[in-house]
Length: 244
Image 1 (tube, one colour):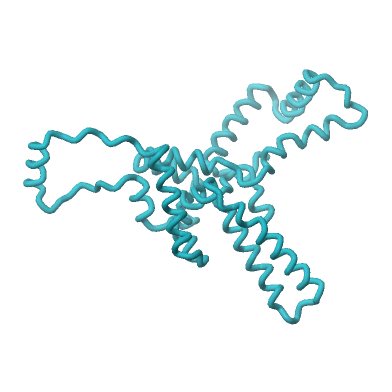
Image 2 (spheres, helix red, strand yellow; image 1 turned 90 degrees about the horizontal axis):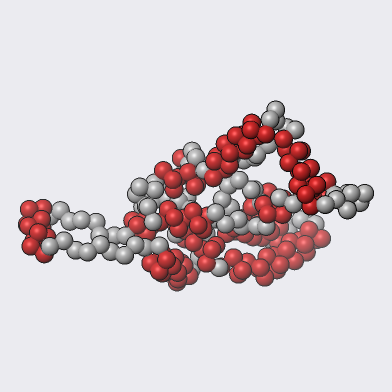
């Protein structure tokens, strides 16, 4: 679960709830296992208490929106893992309110009233779909993981024409990392370069050393930049597992 939630190149915000539920179920299996050794059972009980303490912190806006805007989850996931109906209703309202306040476009001016009457008379039973993007998205079924060929962000890119404003909201929230691992990993090379004997290196020297280290992996700086740009574009689509 740690590895699952700490990946750098795919959206992880929507995985937070899933990881917690998986850990809870795993620990509960040990708590109720009468054949398990006593130290293991005691450790499982303490682990459960610790997770129960921090789980409410995953109830923030970014976690809820990230879960709902994952096309594999939406609101169905909350029902499947037995969230209470009133809690799910509250989550749904929270997401809708934020959508309406920050992303839903202002409605266009209505057409001439006489023209509307003509259209209604001619179309008769046909009625336009007046639902907004969020309502349409939530009314449709979930997407299977196997169909996300280009990753979750790739799915939103492919459906951008259908959800032009909701896709912006999805990118904003799903682009947030669920952990601090990706940010921390950006600085791990520093400890390799600045060992106890090189602590007095100037900032410009550190910069040149890091650049040189990266360029040595390629034949030229231009090739490095070209390859890096390609990897970044793939990363933005969420279809890379590693930059190696």
